[in-house]
Amino acid sequence: MNIALLIAGGAGTRMKQDIPKQFLTVNEKPVIVYTLEAFQKHVEIDVIAVVCLEGWEHVLEAYARQFNITKLQHIFPGGDCGQASIRNGIYALEKEYEKDDIILIHDANRPMVSADIILDCIVKTKQFGNAIPVIPCAEAMLETEDGMVSTGSYPREKLKRTQTPHGFKLGDICQLHREAEKAGITNSVASCTLMIELGKQVHFSMGSEKNIKITTVDDVDIFKALLLAKRSEWLK
Ligand SMILES: C[C@](O)(CO)[C@H](O)COP(=O)(O)O
Image 1 (tube, rainbow, N blue to C red):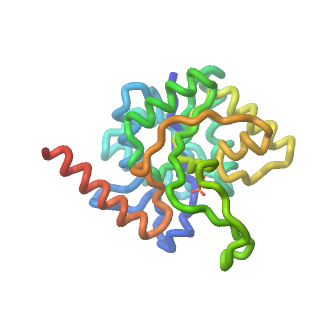
Image 2 (image 1 turned 90 degrees about the vertical axis):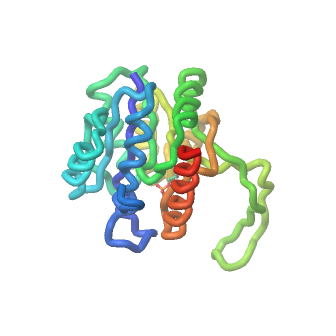
């Protein structure tokens, strides 16, 4: 069984909009619906669950009905940070599914995730026990203490930019979060950073520059351009 867990618990403060970024409508469709559709259409995905921002559950249910997202079977409450939201989702799923089931934890605001990225993540998770899609760093990477001036640089060949979905066995990711609770780690940026903070290794799967995370208003423009490019490809 392969389960997609979409994380839609964030209020989207970096976007400076009243509507959380995952519920913003772009070209007449909410961002989260594009993301749901990517997993709905994927033959390898059996079930979709969403960790949802409080107060938006009914909106999500209505969208699922309107856009025929039949694989959406669970909606769980969000937490006060990403780590807490993921923990809520996986602990709830643990009660219903097997330890060896594969879970793909995905940002609800990454609507351009492709079928190939999802498939490669599943294949690598089966092979290595976990998989994190990555892309190279194309720019020079500088360090700073205050965000104003540089304090050093970092070799970009040694860096990878991480994306989602993050693939795990359900039992392993629950175990990781229990270890984090014991160690007092409460606000790791992502499951991959939590793995590393707890001394474990993550394996890489295929990412893409097109698998964007909609965080700022600029990202919405990039998303619109990518949608247009996809549409022109279909029309060819
Ligand atoms: C998980 C993630 O997408 C990996 O790049 C990223 O860390 C999520 O960050 P956010 O702060 O929850 O948007």
